[in-house]
Image: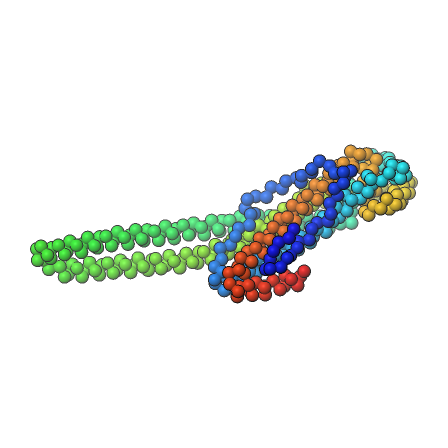
Length: 405
Protein backbone atom coordinates (compact mmCIF):
# COMPACT_ATOMS: atom_id res chain seq x y z
CA UNK A 1 0.00 0.00 0.00
CA UNK A 2 1.39 3.41 -0.92
CA UNK A 3 0.17 6.87 -0.10
CA UNK A 4 1.39 10.38 -0.76
CA UNK A 5 2.48 12.47 2.19
CA UNK A 6 4.21 15.88 2.15
CA UNK A 7 5.39 15.45 -1.44
CA UNK A 8 7.13 12.11 -0.77
CA UNK A 9 6.28 8.50 -1.45
CA UNK A 10 6.02 6.51 1.74
CA UNK A 11 5.40 2.78 1.94
CA UNK A 12 3.82 0.65 4.59
CA UNK A 13 5.63 -2.68 4.59
CA UNK A 14 3.53 -5.49 3.17
CA UNK A 15 2.88 -8.65 5.10
CA UNK A 16 4.93 -11.72 4.18
CA UNK A 17 3.99 -13.35 0.89
CA UNK A 18 0.92 -15.50 1.23
CA UNK A 19 0.65 -19.09 0.02
CA UNK A 20 -1.49 -19.10 -3.11
CA UNK A 21 -0.67 -22.25 -5.14
CA UNK A 22 -3.46 -24.48 -6.35
CA UNK A 23 -2.38 -27.24 -3.99
CA UNK A 24 -2.50 -24.97 -0.94
CA UNK A 25 -5.53 -22.92 -1.90
CA UNK A 26 -8.69 -23.68 0.09
CA UNK A 27 -12.17 -22.19 0.22
CA UNK A 28 -11.97 -18.64 1.55
CA UNK A 29 -11.53 -18.66 5.33
CA UNK A 30 -13.03 -15.71 7.13
CA UNK A 31 -11.83 -14.83 10.61
CA UNK A 32 -14.21 -15.30 13.48
CA UNK A 33 -15.71 -11.90 13.96
CA UNK A 34 -14.89 -9.86 17.03
CA UNK A 35 -17.76 -7.65 18.13
CA UNK A 36 -16.27 -4.19 18.56
CA UNK A 37 -18.90 -1.85 20.05
CA UNK A 38 -19.78 1.34 18.25
CA UNK A 39 -18.24 3.37 21.09
CA UNK A 40 -14.73 2.42 19.98
CA UNK A 41 -14.96 4.26 16.66
CA UNK A 42 -12.41 7.04 16.70
CA UNK A 43 -13.97 10.49 16.65
CA UNK A 44 -12.37 13.51 15.09
CA UNK A 45 -11.45 16.26 17.51
CA UNK A 46 -12.75 19.78 17.06
CA UNK A 47 -9.61 21.91 17.26
CA UNK A 48 -9.09 25.56 16.42
CA UNK A 49 -5.96 25.18 14.28
CA UNK A 50 -5.47 28.93 14.23
CA UNK A 51 -4.75 28.77 17.96
CA UNK A 52 -1.01 28.04 18.16
CA UNK A 53 -1.10 26.09 21.41
CA UNK A 54 -4.16 24.02 20.48
CA UNK A 55 -2.69 23.25 17.04
CA UNK A 56 0.69 22.10 18.38
CA UNK A 57 -0.94 19.94 21.07
CA UNK A 58 -3.22 18.38 18.45
CA UNK A 59 -0.28 17.64 16.14
CA UNK A 60 1.56 16.07 19.06
CA UNK A 61 -1.40 13.83 19.82
CA UNK A 62 -1.61 12.75 16.19
CA UNK A 63 2.12 11.96 16.23
CA UNK A 64 1.75 9.90 19.42
CA UNK A 65 -1.10 7.93 17.85
CA UNK A 66 1.08 7.17 14.77
CA UNK A 67 3.94 5.89 16.97
CA UNK A 68 1.63 3.71 19.06
CA UNK A 69 -0.06 2.24 15.96
CA UNK A 70 3.33 1.55 14.33
CA UNK A 71 4.48 -0.33 17.44
CA UNK A 72 1.37 -2.48 17.28
CA UNK A 73 2.01 -3.16 13.57
CA UNK A 74 5.56 -4.34 14.28
CA UNK A 75 4.42 -6.96 16.79
CA UNK A 76 1.61 -8.10 14.51
CA UNK A 77 3.90 -8.48 11.48
CA UNK A 78 6.30 -10.67 13.45
CA UNK A 79 3.53 -13.06 14.50
CA UNK A 80 2.03 -12.91 11.00
CA UNK A 81 5.38 -13.94 9.51
CA UNK A 82 5.49 -17.02 11.75
CA UNK A 83 1.97 -18.09 10.79
CA UNK A 84 2.74 -17.58 7.08
CA UNK A 85 5.94 -19.63 7.48
CA UNK A 86 3.88 -22.54 8.85
CA UNK A 87 1.56 -22.36 5.83
CA UNK A 88 4.54 -22.40 3.44
CA UNK A 89 5.88 -25.50 5.22
CA UNK A 90 2.54 -27.22 4.65
CA UNK A 91 2.81 -26.34 0.96
CA UNK A 92 6.30 -27.89 0.75
CA UNK A 93 5.06 -31.10 2.35
CA UNK A 94 2.00 -31.31 0.09
CA UNK A 95 4.02 -30.73 -3.08
CA UNK A 96 6.70 -33.36 -2.33
CA UNK A 97 6.45 -36.58 -4.43
CA UNK A 98 4.86 -39.54 -2.61
CA UNK A 99 7.98 -41.70 -2.89
CA UNK A 100 9.97 -39.05 -1.01
CA UNK A 101 7.43 -38.96 1.82
CA UNK A 102 7.27 -42.71 2.58
CA UNK A 103 9.73 -42.54 5.49
CA UNK A 104 8.16 -39.31 6.67
CA UNK A 105 4.66 -40.82 6.80
CA UNK A 106 5.95 -43.99 8.46
CA UNK A 107 7.64 -42.03 11.25
CA UNK A 108 4.62 -39.77 11.67
CA UNK A 109 2.24 -42.73 11.82
CA UNK A 110 4.38 -44.43 14.48
CA UNK A 111 4.46 -41.20 16.50
CA UNK A 112 0.68 -40.99 16.31
CA UNK A 113 0.25 -44.60 17.47
CA UNK A 114 2.65 -44.24 20.39
CA UNK A 115 1.13 -40.91 21.37
CA UNK A 116 -2.38 -42.36 21.34
CA UNK A 117 -1.29 -45.14 23.69
CA UNK A 118 0.20 -42.62 26.06
CA UNK A 119 -2.85 -40.38 25.91
CA UNK A 120 -5.31 -43.08 26.99
CA UNK A 121 -4.25 -42.77 30.60
CA UNK A 122 -3.91 -39.01 30.27
CA UNK A 123 -7.48 -38.54 29.07
CA UNK A 124 -8.81 -40.43 32.07
CA UNK A 125 -6.93 -38.35 34.61
CA UNK A 126 -6.57 -34.88 33.17
CA UNK A 127 -9.10 -32.38 31.85
CA UNK A 128 -7.98 -30.77 28.61
CA UNK A 129 -9.04 -30.96 24.98
CA UNK A 130 -6.80 -32.23 22.21
CA UNK A 131 -6.63 -28.74 20.77
CA UNK A 132 -5.51 -27.28 24.11
CA UNK A 133 -2.92 -30.01 24.50
CA UNK A 134 -1.48 -29.37 21.04
CA UNK A 135 -1.38 -25.63 21.69
CA UNK A 136 0.43 -26.11 25.01
CA UNK A 137 2.93 -28.46 23.41
CA UNK A 138 3.58 -26.01 20.57
CA UNK A 139 3.99 -22.98 22.84
CA UNK A 140 5.18 -24.54 26.07
CA UNK A 141 8.11 -22.14 26.26
CA UNK A 142 5.87 -19.08 26.24
CA UNK A 143 2.70 -20.28 27.95
CA UNK A 144 3.66 -19.07 31.44
CA UNK A 145 4.34 -15.60 30.09
CA UNK A 146 1.09 -15.72 28.14
CA UNK A 147 -0.88 -16.65 31.28
CA UNK A 148 0.46 -13.58 33.04
CA UNK A 149 -0.05 -11.45 29.94
CA UNK A 150 -3.62 -12.71 29.47
CA UNK A 151 -4.50 -11.95 33.11
CA UNK A 152 -3.06 -8.45 32.74
CA UNK A 153 -5.02 -7.87 29.54
CA UNK A 154 -8.25 -9.03 31.22
CA UNK A 155 -7.70 -6.68 34.17
CA UNK A 156 -6.86 -3.89 31.76
CA UNK A 157 -10.03 -4.64 29.80
CA UNK A 158 -12.16 -3.96 32.88
CA UNK A 159 -10.35 -0.67 33.48
CA UNK A 160 -10.75 0.37 29.84
CA UNK A 161 -14.49 -0.36 29.92
CA UNK A 162 -14.85 1.72 33.09
CA UNK A 163 -12.88 4.55 31.49
CA UNK A 164 -15.06 4.42 28.37
CA UNK A 165 -18.19 4.48 30.51
CA UNK A 166 -16.96 7.44 32.56
CA UNK A 167 -15.78 9.37 29.51
CA UNK A 168 -19.09 8.70 27.77
CA UNK A 169 -21.01 10.02 30.77
CA UNK A 170 -18.76 13.07 30.99
CA UNK A 171 -19.21 13.80 27.29
CA UNK A 172 -23.00 13.48 27.58
CA UNK A 173 -23.03 15.90 30.51
CA UNK A 174 -20.94 18.40 28.55
CA UNK A 175 -23.26 18.10 25.55
CA UNK A 176 -26.23 18.68 27.87
CA UNK A 177 -24.48 21.80 29.23
CA UNK A 178 -23.97 23.07 25.67
CA UNK A 179 -27.63 22.57 24.89
CA UNK A 180 -28.59 24.44 28.06
CA UNK A 181 -26.31 27.34 27.17
CA UNK A 182 -27.70 27.53 23.63
CA UNK A 183 -31.26 27.37 25.00
CA UNK A 184 -30.48 30.16 27.48
CA UNK A 185 -28.96 32.33 24.75
CA UNK A 186 -32.05 31.89 22.60
CA UNK A 187 -34.25 32.81 25.57
CA UNK A 188 -32.25 36.01 26.12
CA UNK A 189 -32.73 36.93 22.45
CA UNK A 190 -36.47 36.41 22.71
CA UNK A 191 -36.66 38.47 25.92
CA UNK A 192 -34.60 41.26 24.34
CA UNK A 193 -36.86 41.39 21.32
CA UNK A 194 -40.01 41.43 23.46
CA UNK A 195 -38.69 44.19 25.74
CA UNK A 196 -37.60 46.22 22.72
CA UNK A 197 -41.09 45.95 21.27
CA UNK A 198 -42.62 46.94 24.63
CA UNK A 199 -40.32 49.94 25.01
CA UNK A 200 -41.10 51.07 21.47
CA UNK A 201 -44.81 50.74 22.19
CA UNK A 202 -44.49 52.71 25.46
CA UNK A 203 -42.46 55.39 23.69
CA UNK A 204 -45.09 55.68 20.98
CA UNK A 205 -47.83 55.91 23.58
CA UNK A 206 -46.00 58.66 25.52
CA UNK A 207 -45.39 60.58 22.31
CA UNK A 208 -49.06 60.34 21.44
CA UNK A 209 -50.10 61.60 24.88
CA UNK A 210 -47.68 64.52 24.68
CA UNK A 211 -48.77 65.47 21.17
CA UNK A 212 -52.54 65.04 21.54
CA UNK A 213 -53.15 65.92 25.17
CA UNK A 214 -50.12 68.11 25.93
CA UNK A 215 -49.21 65.86 28.88
CA UNK A 216 -45.80 66.25 30.51
CA UNK A 217 -43.99 62.95 29.69
CA UNK A 218 -40.49 63.79 30.90
CA UNK A 219 -40.63 61.69 34.07
CA UNK A 220 -42.27 58.62 32.45
CA UNK A 221 -39.90 58.91 29.48
CA UNK A 222 -36.80 59.04 31.69
CA UNK A 223 -38.08 56.13 33.77
CA UNK A 224 -38.76 54.09 30.64
CA UNK A 225 -35.30 54.80 29.22
CA UNK A 226 -33.65 53.94 32.54
CA UNK A 227 -35.62 50.71 32.75
CA UNK A 228 -34.58 49.85 29.21
CA UNK A 229 -30.89 50.46 29.99
CA UNK A 230 -31.06 48.27 33.10
CA UNK A 231 -32.72 45.42 31.23
CA UNK A 232 -30.28 45.74 28.32
CA UNK A 233 -27.32 45.63 30.71
CA UNK A 234 -28.68 42.50 32.38
CA UNK A 235 -29.24 40.78 29.01
CA UNK A 236 -25.78 41.71 27.73
CA UNK A 237 -24.12 40.50 30.92
CA UNK A 238 -25.94 37.17 30.79
CA UNK A 239 -25.08 36.80 27.10
CA UNK A 240 -21.40 37.41 27.86
CA UNK A 241 -21.47 34.76 30.59
CA UNK A 242 -23.06 32.30 28.16
CA UNK A 243 -20.30 32.89 25.58
CA UNK A 244 -17.61 32.34 28.19
CA UNK A 245 -19.36 29.16 29.44
CA UNK A 246 -19.70 27.92 25.85
CA UNK A 247 -15.96 28.40 25.17
CA UNK A 248 -15.03 26.56 28.37
CA UNK A 249 -17.49 23.74 27.65
CA UNK A 250 -16.16 23.38 24.08
CA UNK A 251 -12.61 22.95 25.39
CA UNK A 252 -13.81 20.35 27.87
CA UNK A 253 -15.61 18.49 25.05
CA UNK A 254 -12.43 18.41 22.94
CA UNK A 255 -10.50 17.08 25.90
CA UNK A 256 -13.12 14.39 26.51
CA UNK A 257 -13.05 13.41 22.82
CA UNK A 258 -9.26 13.18 22.84
CA UNK A 259 -9.21 10.97 25.93
CA UNK A 260 -12.06 8.86 24.56
CA UNK A 261 -10.23 8.30 21.27
CA UNK A 262 -7.09 7.15 23.07
CA UNK A 263 -9.06 4.74 25.22
CA UNK A 264 -10.99 3.42 22.20
CA UNK A 265 -7.80 2.61 20.28
CA UNK A 266 -6.40 0.80 23.30
CA UNK A 267 -9.72 -1.00 23.73
CA UNK A 268 -9.73 -2.34 20.17
CA UNK A 269 -6.12 -3.53 20.38
CA UNK A 270 -6.77 -5.09 23.80
CA UNK A 271 -9.91 -6.91 22.60
CA UNK A 272 -8.15 -8.28 19.52
CA UNK A 273 -5.11 -9.36 21.55
CA UNK A 274 -7.34 -11.16 24.07
CA UNK A 275 -9.26 -12.83 21.25
CA UNK A 276 -6.03 -13.92 19.57
CA UNK A 277 -4.50 -15.37 22.76
CA UNK A 278 -7.73 -17.20 23.60
CA UNK A 279 -7.89 -18.67 20.10
CA UNK A 280 -4.19 -19.54 20.22
CA UNK A 281 -4.67 -21.74 23.31
CA UNK A 282 -8.37 -22.53 22.67
CA UNK A 283 -9.45 -21.26 26.09
CA UNK A 284 -11.87 -18.61 27.35
CA UNK A 285 -9.82 -16.73 29.92
CA UNK A 286 -6.59 -16.67 31.93
CA UNK A 287 -8.09 -18.79 34.71
CA UNK A 288 -8.89 -21.59 32.30
CA UNK A 289 -5.46 -21.37 30.68
CA UNK A 290 -3.78 -21.59 34.09
CA UNK A 291 -5.90 -24.62 35.00
CA UNK A 292 -5.28 -26.37 31.68
CA UNK A 293 -1.58 -25.66 31.94
CA UNK A 294 -1.53 -27.24 35.41
CA UNK A 295 -3.24 -30.31 33.98
CA UNK A 296 -0.72 -30.38 31.19
CA UNK A 297 2.21 -30.31 33.63
CA UNK A 298 0.72 -33.22 35.57
CA UNK A 299 0.31 -35.15 32.33
CA UNK A 300 3.92 -34.46 31.41
CA UNK A 301 5.10 -35.98 34.66
CA UNK A 302 3.08 -39.09 33.85
CA UNK A 303 4.56 -39.23 30.39
CA UNK A 304 8.05 -39.08 31.85
CA UNK A 305 7.43 -42.45 33.54
CA UNK A 306 6.75 -44.10 30.20
CA UNK A 307 10.42 -44.22 29.27
CA UNK A 308 10.35 -46.94 26.69
CA UNK A 309 7.49 -45.31 24.79
CA UNK A 310 9.26 -41.96 24.97
CA UNK A 311 12.48 -43.39 23.56
CA UNK A 312 10.62 -44.85 20.59
CA UNK A 313 8.80 -41.58 20.01
CA UNK A 314 12.08 -39.67 20.10
CA UNK A 315 13.67 -42.04 17.62
CA UNK A 316 10.78 -41.61 15.23
CA UNK A 317 10.81 -37.86 15.83
CA UNK A 318 14.46 -37.72 14.73
CA UNK A 319 13.50 -39.50 11.55
CA UNK A 320 10.61 -37.10 11.11
CA UNK A 321 12.85 -34.06 11.61
CA UNK A 322 15.43 -35.39 9.16
CA UNK A 323 12.80 -36.04 6.52
CA UNK A 324 11.27 -32.62 7.01
CA UNK A 325 14.70 -31.02 6.76
CA UNK A 326 15.34 -32.91 3.54
CA UNK A 327 12.07 -31.51 2.17
CA UNK A 328 13.16 -27.97 3.09
CA UNK A 329 10.62 -27.42 5.90
CA UNK A 330 11.68 -24.45 8.00
CA UNK A 331 9.68 -24.85 11.22
CA UNK A 332 10.16 -28.55 11.84
CA UNK A 333 9.73 -28.81 15.60
CA UNK A 334 5.99 -28.10 15.58
CA UNK A 335 5.28 -31.17 13.44
CA UNK A 336 6.01 -33.53 16.31
CA UNK A 337 2.84 -32.29 18.02
CA UNK A 338 1.00 -32.30 14.69
CA UNK A 339 2.19 -35.66 13.32
CA UNK A 340 -1.43 -36.75 12.86
CA UNK A 341 -1.87 -34.01 10.28
CA UNK A 342 0.83 -35.66 8.17
CA UNK A 343 -1.05 -38.97 7.93
CA UNK A 344 -4.67 -37.75 8.05
CA UNK A 345 -5.76 -35.25 5.34
CA UNK A 346 -8.72 -34.05 7.41
CA UNK A 347 -6.40 -33.14 10.26
CA UNK A 348 -4.13 -31.24 7.85
CA UNK A 349 -7.17 -29.29 6.65
CA UNK A 350 -7.94 -28.37 10.26
CA UNK A 351 -4.35 -27.22 10.83
CA UNK A 352 -4.45 -25.10 7.68
CA UNK A 353 -7.84 -23.68 8.65
CA UNK A 354 -6.60 -22.75 12.12
CA UNK A 355 -3.55 -20.97 10.65
CA UNK A 356 -5.72 -19.09 8.16
CA UNK A 357 -8.07 -17.95 10.94
CA UNK A 358 -5.13 -16.74 13.02
CA UNK A 359 -3.63 -14.94 10.04
CA UNK A 360 -6.94 -13.25 9.25
CA UNK A 361 -7.21 -12.01 12.83
CA UNK A 362 -3.71 -10.56 12.63
CA UNK A 363 -4.48 -8.98 9.25
CA UNK A 364 -7.63 -7.33 10.64
CA UNK A 365 -5.70 -5.87 13.55
CA UNK A 366 -2.93 -4.68 11.23
CA UNK A 367 -5.49 -3.04 8.93
CA UNK A 368 -7.04 -1.27 11.91
CA UNK A 369 -3.73 0.17 13.12
CA UNK A 370 -2.66 1.03 9.56
CA UNK A 371 -5.95 2.91 9.18
CA UNK A 372 -5.22 4.84 12.37
CA UNK A 373 -1.81 5.87 11.00
CA UNK A 374 -3.27 6.90 7.64
CA UNK A 375 -6.04 8.96 9.25
CA UNK A 376 -3.53 10.76 11.47
CA UNK A 377 -1.19 11.41 8.54
CA UNK A 378 -4.06 12.75 6.42
CA UNK A 379 -5.15 15.04 9.25
CA UNK A 380 -1.58 16.35 9.64
CA UNK A 381 -1.33 16.99 5.90
CA UNK A 382 -4.59 18.94 5.96
CA UNK A 383 -3.14 21.18 8.67
CA UNK A 384 0.15 21.43 6.81
CA UNK A 385 -1.58 22.67 3.65
CA UNK A 386 -3.24 25.57 5.49
CA UNK A 387 -0.16 27.74 5.88
CA UNK A 388 3.62 27.44 5.24
CA UNK A 389 4.40 27.97 8.92
CA UNK A 390 2.06 25.08 9.79
CA UNK A 391 4.07 22.87 7.41
CA UNK A 392 7.26 23.69 9.32
CA UNK A 393 5.63 22.75 12.62
CA UNK A 394 4.43 19.44 11.17
CA UNK A 395 7.89 18.66 9.80
CA UNK A 396 9.50 19.36 13.18
CA UNK A 397 7.04 17.09 14.98
CA UNK A 398 7.61 14.32 12.47
CA UNK A 399 11.40 14.40 12.90
CA UNK A 400 11.13 11.95 15.77
CA UNK A 401 8.83 9.71 13.72
CA UNK A 402 11.34 9.66 10.84
CA UNK A 403 14.11 8.84 13.27
CA UNK A 404 12.21 5.75 14.39
CA UNK A 405 12.09 4.48 10.84
